[in-house]
Length: 386
Image (cartoon, rainbow, N blue to C red; front, top):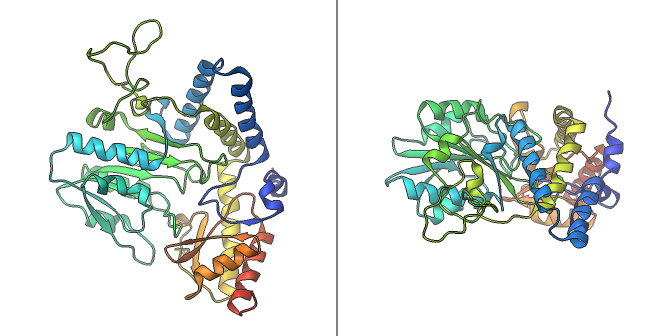
């Protein structure tokens, strides 16, 4: 059955006024998700805390849905504030459990949320440099040695859109007994991940990029083996095993146990309302079909790449291999990239400036007309007619 992309475009009011290429910063909401979010807060307004237990069960169902998309089980899933929080928890757990010296290998182009938590704790970080914006699994492995505890890498690089071969890298790391920690924020859920096949030990994904539901936090996957070796370095009333009729540990100076599941990383109350709306967003994406979404994204990126090629503009993102591409295309005019971004914004064409490059992130609501507007405006800017 043919997908009606125009109807999907109509689901996103942002398209009425903007050529929006900022989904790698935050994707806008479709109408159905906005209505679901408003409905959840309306429940709080009218009924307060009455639906809390029911809402927790709904969030557990969301965990199961996300676990299925990752090829794992719900017990391995938690929700945290953001990816920076997840990585900081891992860094603290490393310090608690591993005597120095040890090091962590990461990539030079990583977004800071992947790495600052480790640097802040004084953990030795080794950064791999890219070759033409690419990172081969072999180049990452080459930076590791006998004291390397983990590799921290993004599924998709935020600035260039390079998509890493997680399965190949995970296999190499598993052979060397090096932990594999993934920031999936710029790839999931549009691009598939199987945490077991890819030998991923821990993974975080912030949902405001491609989740179609706004700022709602991040999911945090940990394997059972990872939790056994690196239990949560902090605790709160929700992360420990309860007691008594209300299932809350209220005793003082009495030993307690962390939840054996990934819930041990969720110390206290979290914002249920956006998560419940996110479940509507997940259902929305499932109805379209993730394979269908990827096909559309590649059609649009092909169209953009061809247009940039006709204008003779340097494309920095790796584009020769489909398996390395994502929804992000970065290019450079050589000079004036920042001014170009500003000139485009003045025409309601919204792109990002990242590591000095012009980043275009395409989504299911974009169409060829949006791209034509972008290409024409870039052409005019280069010719001084902006």
